[in-house]
Length: 400
Image (tube, rainbow, N blue to C red; front, side):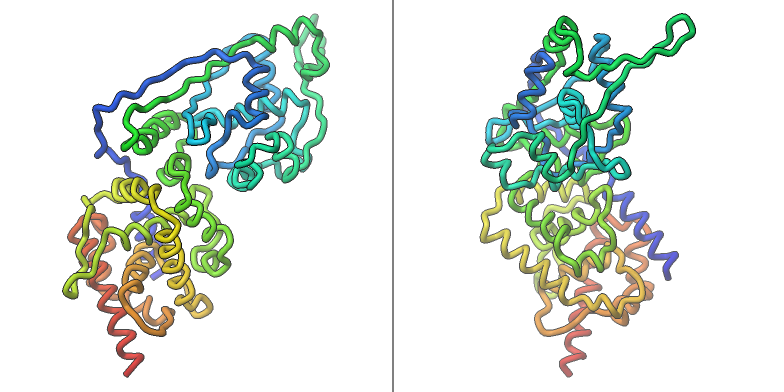
């Protein structure tokens, strides 16, 4: 059983990480390039004129990487452009270049993370700080409040006459002529502008995807986290970060945000899949989970507080119905997703435990609709209908 569930999970991940090629638009995307002096750019970043999207990967650069970037700056070597777009607060959201911006600020201030055994900075927690909205704090202060900084020496090492020499290249220790040269050394900032407000977020998603196609590629939900910053997404991340029972159900926080993606799937199936005359009807589903979730995110960004609260209540109610202590193994994502939708339509006091889950997972009909082409519309419909019937009969049997 465990081996089969692992195979289902692997296939599920492969399906949700496929590219969404459905979106083609005649919308004009314009790039405006500005060559910003180093000091002007970093001061602007510290003053929160440039900001990191709220739900991003951790800052993971080492002191040596910061040092190498500083050496490139001093020697006049090219530094890749910073890509940004203007948010509703008129700040520049950094689509690509967050690690470089934080590193340049640390170099400029002569600082690095004090805890050398764990220098990873949780940017999500950092950029969710309430003080950000008021812009009454600098990025340096925001960072130091959560991750104490220490003064460090950045060095340039070179050989002269077979003798290794070391130069202190801390910004504060540079000769005034070199410091002025660096201050005016330009770094390209490219602002992305979209002339179609209706499809702006979907287009930014594609831009973000293209920018991150090299190196360690961002996963689909990480891309959504960067573009769809809204109250609905805040709610999903709040559940993911603070609901202790959800953490027991899913396990440790996923480094590529697949746990948040599963919560998004719960809400998306509730929004688009409807119980009609005893059958589950799939609306706006075209055999592609990435497109399905992107379409829903386009809708969710417009949700008002009342609607968000309904989804929050439904998700938390579902979480409470699962008997975590009784489960022998983790419930696969596909089954959790189907059980969630079924729970929306099945009323009554009941708990979802080991016997029900094993009964479903061991059934050949359910397996047939999960192990191969599980994203096809016909199999998705059959799977949801089967689980709905199973949960309905389970609750009915309990009542009797």
